[in-house]
Image (cartoon, rainbow, N blue to C red; front, side, top):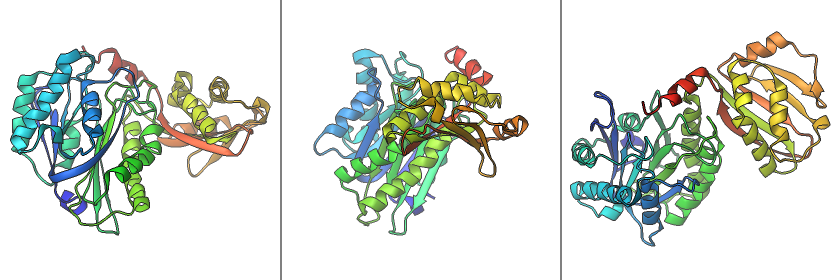
Length: 392
């Protein structure tokens, strides 16, 4: 499959003892030739060692990338100088096995904060990975990246221009703009100059990974990488490549929300009638992150007052008397509020709509013509169960 979508790339996954027996816990993605590369990272002031390492590597004037090593179990965050050295050592181990330079290897980590990497297991895992590389192992690589995820996340795109893209991602909790406890690696065999790759990635993540919320918490490790090895020989048109990259990022981002810890519903929060797009996005983000709103989503409770209240403390200026709110599921539209007051809607029908697996809540602020959206999920009892015993 990968040869058809992104030539010259291989992947591998192994169990290295970072997770319980039988579970894949390390992954490796390798290009047969050097790649141009770009990345976007967490905006948390507390950045994990692999984030600091990757940012420094990609900032080099002539940076090229051959491989990405991914480990689970330990986030290698808040681990001091030893954590950064272990990130470097992981890259060096992979480089020695692959026959490339250490500064051509990026590293990604996910798991518990404040835990050092078990370098003996990492070393053994890297050795096993380099001997297991295959062109068709992307699904397994996505599985090896998972922590509290319940399923792997993979997306592909084949373009009419003759090049393709493959993307893998992980994430289920600690998900909030900008990005979250999520990792994503997207590869393409298009010829893409470095600056174009950066611009395309910024645009694509703005409309995908920066539009998702599970719980409102931001991680220390968020990373999205894109690698282009040019194996197709096709020089990418910037607009077409940006769209193709977005076509891979959007389903990966949505898959993270659908697999949110304890989630039972996928909800689009749309805000229109805002003074500007930034205000619409701010308001949507506030609604999508509200614990009261999200628990109402879980209980299928059309308690629209919670939505209006969240909008009211978002910091966006609007007149409550001009607001309106609807529920939609593609087939039905139910207006719950008009001119800041309840409508004579059918409560049973609204509950039935919200009991569905996927639907939209749309708030119009009546204060302008701009709109924006976010993808979120409900907040269930299972979320508390998962996170109250994350380490124990």
